[in-house]
Length: 80
Image 1 (cartoon, rainbow, N blue to C red):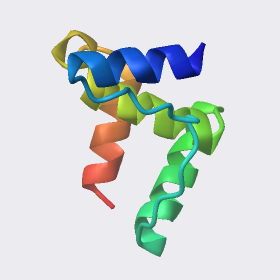
Image 2: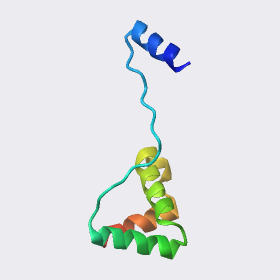
Image 3: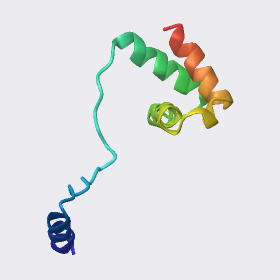
């Protein structure tokens, strides 16, 4: 099946879509790491859930900008 997809992409001159695992590492400052951990604790969510929420905010766009959690996160990050 994958071979068929790759062959079809080659035939039509399309770059095959890359598969992503949904997992990657990021580097930040200790201050940002601490601020994020504190916000996650206040919100009673995991640090991972907090990061997903922040990413979702920037990827999904303005429809989420009235979300209380997003606004709280951004306010606290701007003070970090």
